[in-house]
Length: 161
Image (tube, rainbow, N blue to C red):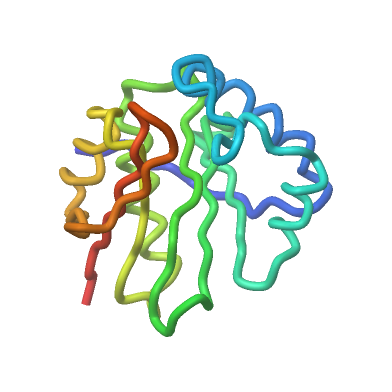
């Protein structure tokens, strides 16, 4: 059984908090791949602030009780009845407790008009690939982006209706 999580909408006033979570959660991926183009670890306050206020872009803190354990960004409006998750993160000290699975499962209920969910991840990160597959996401075959040798982004979707 997945743990229960709650969500709190983040605003432009929370950009510094978002950046702290990005740095804590994506430092290992940055160290492994040195990807400055797509890793949230390299985002600036300006780029995050622009995403926070962009129409159809909503950042949510993920909480267990009063404790912030991560965040998830949901992007709607790019296509009718579809949404994209980018990014989803669980802070390192709270990983391995099924919180990412709980957050993904429960965020869908906040968007009843969304019929198809999209997410992408690095193909070489097998734990992340397993997470999305376990939750009913299916890899979109033939769709991938090589960021650099040894780092390929693959894409998933999940139909909920």
